Length: 245
Image (cartoon, rainbow, N blue to C red; front, top):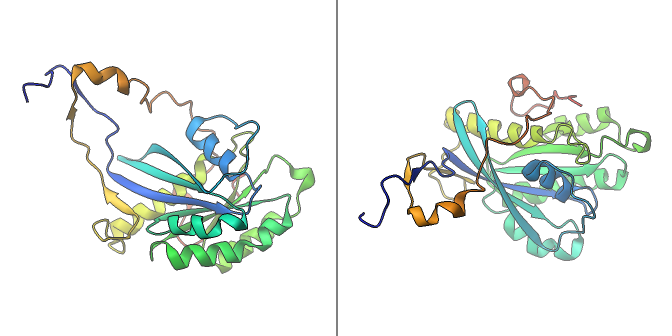
């Protein structure tokens, strides 16, 4: 302990739970832009198709709970399917994305959902996201139709715009809240292998004063206030009562 500076005690990315999410759906639906907007609070210009899988993370707060989200952005192209499916295992949440201006991306949702439920956690929480809500004049999938599909498949549903940032926070927070409710009800055990959730460590961590600068960019309190219109208290797990855009 002599190597540690007593004045260098800091709360470094402490959290109550760690949750694994997968972001899935057809290529071109804006999955990477949605994730970038959520993690960086900005639109990702000149986005290229994801090759295989890309990883991001963000820590969020729900009530008194701090939750670190592991976010696995998967490629939507068929040629990467065998690779990306291996990352589904042990996922607690799935953000299933389609493009409201592309009917084909909506019609293929069944395949994505079937794969996710077959390979991820048995308690997988799925949120269906209709992306590109800013392009209303090009819409090919009506909100009511997508809402019916969500209800029939027992998933949550809402629409977002990764361009404007409208409602982008909502699917990630809704998914986390649903997982927390499962933990509180006893139907999900974070200690169980493959649950997609593990307990975190909110104890104060001591770091060597010489390494403090390396953590200077880890600030979660400076993000501008979320513009999400979603009120999480209005949601009941397993329903799709959410025309929130």
